[in-house]
Length: 248
Image 1 (tube, rainbow, N blue to C red):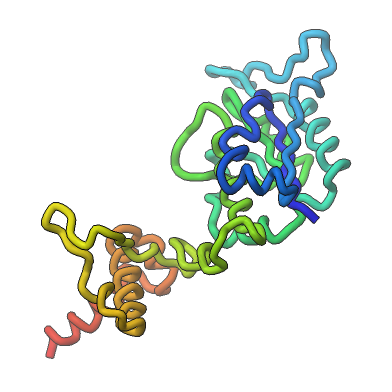
Image 2 (cartoon, rainbow, N blue to C red; image 1 turned 180 degrees about the horizontal axis):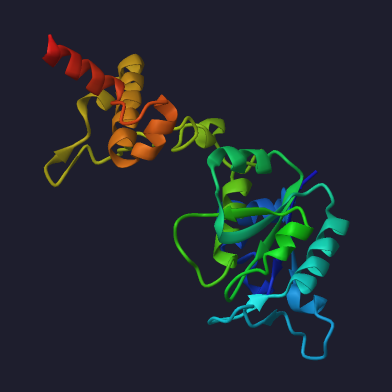
């Protein structure tokens, strides 16, 4: 059974977009996943196909109407009742790699793409919709965010990536950033590949990679490090040992 992606959008021509090429594109051709778009305007009931209106209480921009959105969501659920519905919004919960893995292991996903000032809040009260953010940024619409979510899921589908370990030895998979990567030439502009990576000693290489992952996460993403270590500003293992040595 393939992974079914349904996108509710005002711009269906944006899909599959970049997901139609490279690994995702080949997987689409093989039938590993499917891509269906529903034009939100098709669920408007007036002759002008109106999907939005002015914000209650005043303010700039327009807000997507809950009745139109509900008809679109209900249609998607009729077609794919087992697929969770995600709404792309900066007010949502930041997506995590763990959540992506859950989605990729399921039957698919329905993604609701916002525009303008976003959604009438009542759509989330009247329907079971997971509000998702891809970061502390604001986009012109939910479509680019939806492409990100789908790309993250599709690459994890069986057979999409070549090496089985490609999806596990990466940033966020174990709560850490990935270790630095190097390749030939051995020397470039006076900079060389770390000697340990040229040693052939797999145990030392693994230890170096783990230490660099911990240190880089502690320095670059203290929020990740705190969640992983369970203590605020706790130093990485190498730094802890260094501090211990200094204290002695």
